[in-house]
Image (cartoon, rainbow, N blue to C red):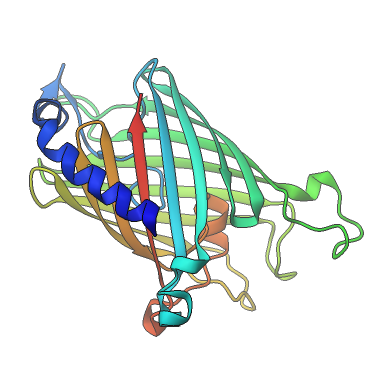
Length: 282
C-alpha cells in the first residue's frame, strides 16, 4: 500500500516538471507519413499494444494485480493478495524488442520477442501490424502433487498478430488474433492448444489521460472450464518518461496464457481486481 501511495505522489510531481518532454510524446503529428503514438503504453491493459521500445532503450515495467475487491475489508479490497510482475523490455532496433519477465502468479518466467511488420502511413498501409511470440516456464507446478511431472509440462507458448489503426488523434483500435499453448492445463477437457481473439482500444480524454479497454474472446474453451473471458477497463496517465496505467480486470494473471486461459473473476458478481502497470524508460 505504501508503495502505491509513493508511486502516485511521484506521478503527480513529475507531471509539472516534464512538460517539454510530454509535449513531444503527446504529439499527434505524422513523421515521414507514418502514424505515431497509436498507443502510449506497451500494453493496452492486459493485451500487448503495437507500441515498441525505441532502439537502444530499456524499459522497466512493474505490474500489480491485487486480490478481488469482492472480499472487502477482509483483504482490504484485495491489497493483501497482490500478484506482481517485473518485466524488462529492450529495443534491439526500432522494429524489434526483446523482453524478460518474472511473475509471482504461478512463479512464471517468460521471454518474448515483439516485432513490427507493417506501420500505418498516409498513402500506404491503413494498419500497423506487429508480431508477438513468447515462451514461459511455470515453476509453481509441484512434483509432489503431479508425480509424472516433467520439465516439458512447465512450458507454454504464445503467438499473436497485433493489428491496430489510429482512427483519429483521439481514438485507436486493435485486433489481436492469438494462439497459445500450455503443455499442462488444469481442465482435462481443455485442449492444450487454444485460440482467442483480442479486441482493444484507447480513447484520449485529455492531454495526459486516456481511457483504455481490452477483451479476450476465447474461441475453443472447454464446456467444463471454470475460467472466464478477460475484460479490462483502465486509465492511462502520461508523465514524461513514465506511463502509469490504472485499471480493473477480471484476471489476476498478467502473461497472455494466464489472462486468456485462466481468468477467474466475474464482473457481474463484482469479483474483479484492481491493478496498475508502471513503466519507466531508461
